[in-house]
Length: 304
Image (cartoon, rainbow, N blue to C red; front, side):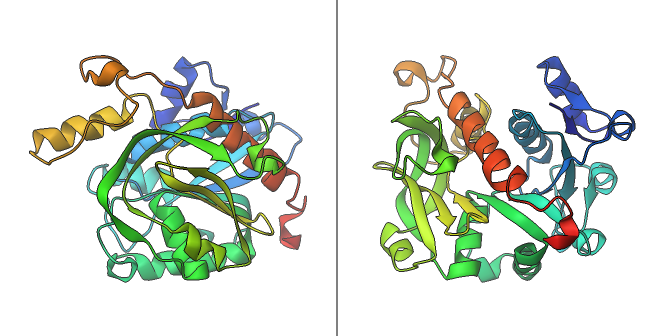
C-alpha cells in the first residue's frame, strides 16, 4: 500500500524508480480511508537521503500512511537548501496542536557534545515531552535513541575508545515480542557511532526492556513496557553505500578510521558492499507500524 507524500518531494522519483507505491495527495484525498499519520523529525544533515531511506521502509506495509516532516527551528541545516526545508518541513509551532499515530526521531551527528550543549536541545525536549500526549508510538534512531533515553529515563551515553562502525550481528532477547516477530536467530544492522549506552544502566529502570543485543555493538533495541517508546541504536534504514560514503569522506580528511566491520567483501574497499540487513530492516519497521501504531492507536486521534 502507498505512502502519501508531497508530489514534488525529491524522494518521490527515487521511490517510484524502485517500484514503491507512492500516492499523491490528490489521489489519496479520493479514498475513503483514514491513513496512519506519521511525523518524522529529521535531524540528519543528509536530509534528502534520510527522507528516501525512511520512506522506503515505511512503504513496506499494507497500510496507507500520511507523512509529515518536522525540523527544529533553533538550528539551520547547512547541507540542504532553505527552499527545500520551507517547502516540505514544518516547525513545532505548526504541529503542536496535532495528534499522530506515530513519530520517528532520527539520529544526528552531535554525539561528541553533551546533550545540553546541543543548540536545539531545549526544543527537542519540548518535542519529546509533547510526543507523550500527542503521539501514540515514537521510534527513536541512533543519537535520537540516546537523547530519548536520557530525557525520559536519565540513561547516560558513554564515549567509546573506538568507533562502533560496520555491520554487526544481533540476537533477539525476547523472541515473543511482536517487534521481533519474523527476525532470524541472527540478523545484521549497520552502526556508526562513537558513544554507547549501558545494559546495566537500562536494567536499573523497571519501565524499560532490552529487546535485542549485539556482543560487538552492544544494546540495539530498547522498549518501554507500554510499547509506546522504542529506542534503536543502529541504522537499519541505511543504504548499501551509506557507510562507504562516511568511510571515504573521513579517510579523505585524514581522520584515523578503521574499515567498516563486515561490510566490504574480504575487507577490500574497492568492492561493492554486500547488503545483508535489508530484510531485517523491513521487518522491524513493518512490525512497529502494524503492532504498535496501526493496531494500538485509537481510530479517532482526539481520543489518544
